[in-house]
Length: 137
Image (cartoon, rainbow, N blue to C red; front, side):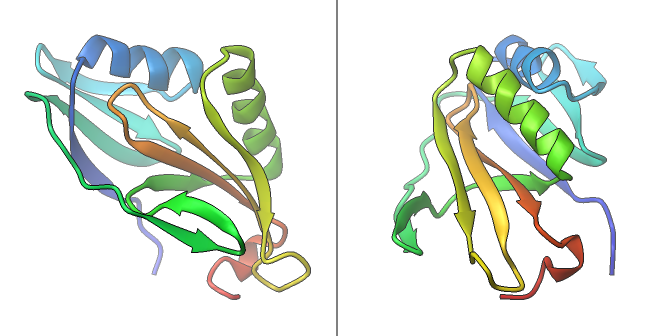
């Protein structure tokens, strides 16, 4: 089954959120009002709604020796887009969790990096060596 996803998340600043996703990552913006904005993240709709300070307990987990955030969301893109976004974020000197290859030499091999958005959400970008193996280990 293939379908775009929609997620709605609280944000601290609609302006900073728009800047991060549109100006830095290059995601088109959709509908918006004073207190919210839709972001088109590679064909998926994220609605950010201005809210008071929120708090998530973000325990981490270990995968292949790397400590990763258990609460995160992300997109799977092709290698060219993955490199473009990574280089754009690197140029902006935004704190990245450096790129890593997971499941090396296995069917689910993929490159990944994380970045924290202005709302403290961890956003992951993945690029599979073979996109047909996205659900294989």
